Image 1 (cartoon, rainbow, N blue to C red):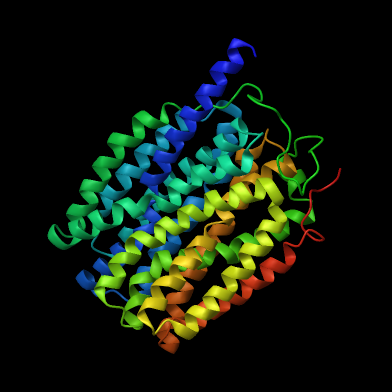
Image 2: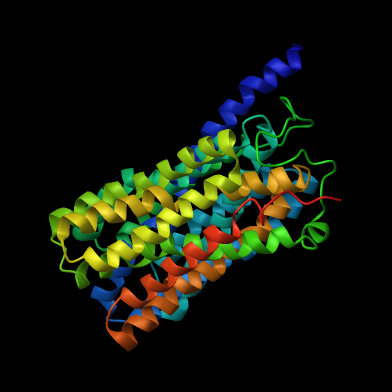
Length: 404
C-alpha cells in the first residue's frame, strides 16, 4: 500500500470520530427539544400547536438548506461551510435565550437549525465519500452520534432547566457548542479519490456505473420510493423527540420511568443506526428496510394499545427507538449505492428534505390533532400504518438500483 493510502486510512477514522462528536452536540436541537418544549409551555403558556410549530420550523430549516450547502461543499470543499454552520448552531441558542414570543423563537431556533442541517449533511457525506468499502457501517456510526448524543446530555439539560431556567440553559449550551464545534469542524475535508476499495458493499445493489447528478437522480422512480419511506418512518422518532414529555403526561407516566427514557430513547435511537447500517452491509439495504419498518409499525400499534401500562410504555418506546433510527443510516448509504459518491452531499441533501415533511407531521400536525381529539393515539396510529406501507414499497422487487 502506498504511503498516501496509509495516511488516508488513518485520517478517515479520525474524521469519523470528529463527525461523531459533532453529531452528538448538534443533536441537542432535535432530541432535547421535548425538554425545551415542556419548559416553554410551563413558562409562557403557549398552545401546543404554537410550540410544536417551532420544531417544524427547525426541521424545515435543517433540511431544505442541505441541497444548497451540499452543492457548495461538493464544489468547494466542506471546511469553510462547516465552520460557518458551527457559528450558526451556537449563536442560534444564544439568541433563543432572548425570545419572548413564538415568532422570535421560530426565527432564532430556525437559524440554529440551518447550521445543524449543514453539519449533518457534511458529516454524513464524509462517511459516504471516505468509506465506499464500509458505507453502511460508517454512516451508521456517524449518525449514531446524532441519535444517541442526548443520552449523555438530557439528564444534564433537565437539571439545568430545573435549577437555572430555560434562558440560562440556552446560553450555557450555546457557548459550549461554539467551544467544541469550531475546532472539530476544521478537520473536515473530502478525499481527492476513493481512499479504499470502491466496491459497493450493498449485496442488494449492483455497482453504480456512473455518478448521477441531482436532476438525473430525480428522474428515477426509486428516489420517490425512498422519499416517501423516509418521510413517514422518521416521523415516528421525531414525534417522540418532539412530544415525548407530553405523551408521557397523557399516559400518566411516573417521573422515575420518564428519567429512564431520557437515557434509553436516544441510546436506542443511536444504536439503531449502527445496527441497521451493519446489517445492511451484510444482507442488503432493501431487506433491512423491510424488516425494520415492519417491526417499527407494529411496535407503535402495540404502544397505542398498551401505553397505559408504565413498564410497557418504557419498553415499547425503547423498541421503537431501536428500530426508528434506522432510516438515518440506511438512506445515506443507499443514495451512495444507487447514485454514486461524487454528488452524494447534494443528492442526500435533496433526499433529506423528506425530514421536513416528517417534522410537519411530528410537530405541528400532531399537536393540532391532539388539540382536536385530546389524545396522541390518532397521530401515532397514522404514522404506524405509513411505516407498514413503507416496508412494502421497500421490497427488493420495487426498491432496487436504477439502471442507465
